[in-house]
Length: 453
Image (tube, rainbow, N blue to C red; front, side, top):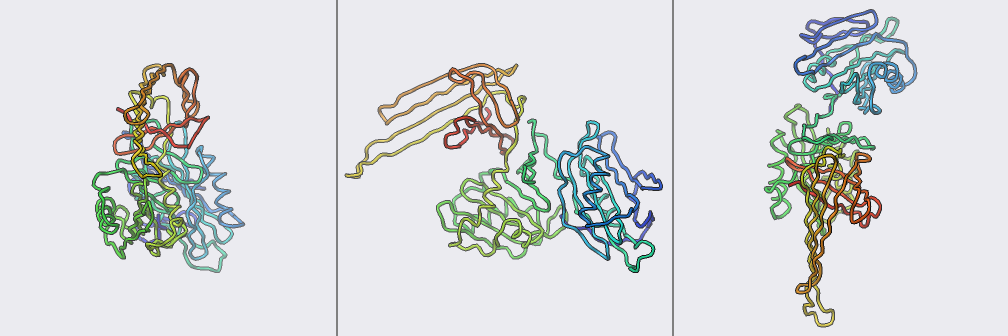
């Protein structure tokens, strides 16, 4: 997300201290205190409103003015579900603009509320945009970019200022996957949305693509040819003008692979810095920042300094992001048959002679069949023991399940007693995996992974 700042003088109109170019085809309403533009598509139920409010006296910092405007303007219009996600302030010619946005609800409608507060000359000017779609994003951005702010009368500064605003105020819309939850808002400010080919994770100007597994990106190879090949498959189609591309790796048991470079993002035309990363079981993750410096500020290391003998702890912030492929569950998601298969083999050797002492084997299969009325049938079959002396066991239960919250499920009978599990979904291409772990006796903390038949 970049600050928008450009001049345009055709068809300029004036309201209070602001001159602007009205968005073409939008309905305009003006009062003594505000001018508003609105556009909607009744058939699709989409809309966007932009309200430019007359300047008022203000003191204190630009952030304090923004906070006051958020409480008195935005919260009076809609019910926001979180604190605003702030962008970097933009300063020009005596005006400093603070901007932030957050999800909202109003009369059953959900969308994003955007506030831009420009402070200067002991005054502040506010712009509020409410929308439930990104269809009008360019028109909104163009309108804001066309605004020039004049000095108030009595000021000694004759220059004009700009309202600064981030491009794309609305988070990426999640696809409709058929499950109840396609977006997760994490407590640390990151937001994950389900997309066709990846999970998209955003926070401020940072964007991450957790790519779904693909057969053509997992072949054995040396670090450089593998990273280059995967870059061409997963990354290159969405960018152009790649510069300063390089690869890197660290020599360790779960060797991390990195590719990086600067390029033009085709969808927005902005210059970005990209890092492609994989380590162990993370899968391929793509990190997109406005610049290399932005990447360093967010992840606390310079990727271009990574060598074969670098400390792997440097990459912990990247490895952590794999865990943001995580989505809540609802009772309606529990339907059909879900299974989990496991096979473990342990080869034994005599410590004195080095000769083979046999092989231990463990194989198990768990199955949940979810039916109408929150009913379920569960079965577990397992084979354990040394080869030639294995034992087979099986257990079954049935009953009703409930979802006490969106991250847990309770079964009325599991081997003779009720049982509570921690549960969540991760996404793969066209499907989801359900991960469950005993909420009381967590054991190793390893979740059992179920796939839907």
